[in-house]
Length: 80
Image (cartoon, rainbow, N blue to C red; front, side, top):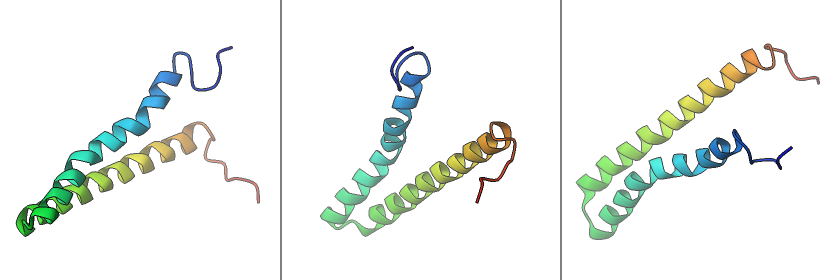
């Protein structure tokens, strides 16, 4: 048995975090540059884009974890 995080499914699980970070990088970098250069309009648009990207990641995570809870755990509540 391969070590944890390797094998057929391991490559996908190892790539998920960096892909999410890459999704946030352009808006965050543009926001920083715009603030440094004093371009308020560009900074505001970049902040809006960053907020949309973060919101989409949170919503996608909620959908995935809700689906996992309903399918893998059969909707059971954890023991108290």
